[in-house]
Length: 296
Image 1 (cartoon, one colour):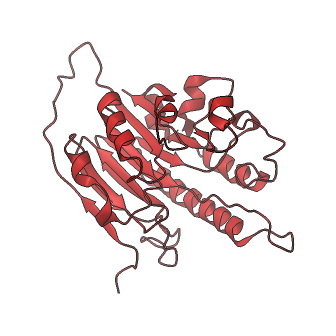
Image 2 (cartoon, rainbow, N blue to C red):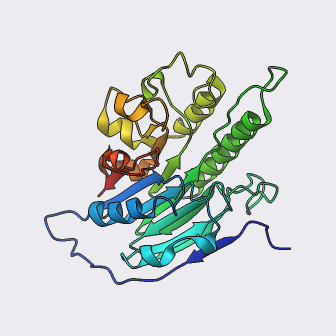
């Protein structure tokens, strides 16, 4: 019986320029991540940004549509191959690439099996090999509210922690099985440290900042991964998300919950990383903004 979640990968192979490696200018690949908060609602902003920023590989989250409803044609017209894992109304992830795409996973693998967890129907993970890199688009569960009516951990928070445990097991397997340059990008719904949240005290019991969440993220990082934004931007607060409410954008009351995590081989290739705030300040924006890294 097929998995109930609709999965589609539309792959179109475009010709791209093969640059002589003997040239003095290195070949650089830009990989970006962006939670678009509804690809249909944000399509004008997405197409505009793709045209202006011209990234090579883009990891999208929170599509909020089934794969068949994803606006693939408009994006393919810009020269991208498209692979999606959609879900009606909620979640949804995609990979866009100017290189051929070889999709390996359309669900987060069960650590004890080779396939995705059939009990988990939420569209939160897609992994592919493209342009010389293994990339994954990740939409980690939010986990709020963290408490139930008995003041115990809520089902939503337990699901978040379980999902993080599964992600850590899969990444450990990846790192042990291959020396590929790996980029794990997406909306992790996780602030690694207090500097990544505008009001740490107010978020102390939030799923994005609770010790149990941060502990699992540290476990992931301790496998030898590099946080591309932290490594490139240095100390200080560098936000990727601002709530629509309470004037968060104008007051810069943000969070850094979107991350690009690099395997050791990918980290050796890191040439820079940053956050493009311009889409957040435009009409009808996503509450997230793109983050990117550039690899040699």
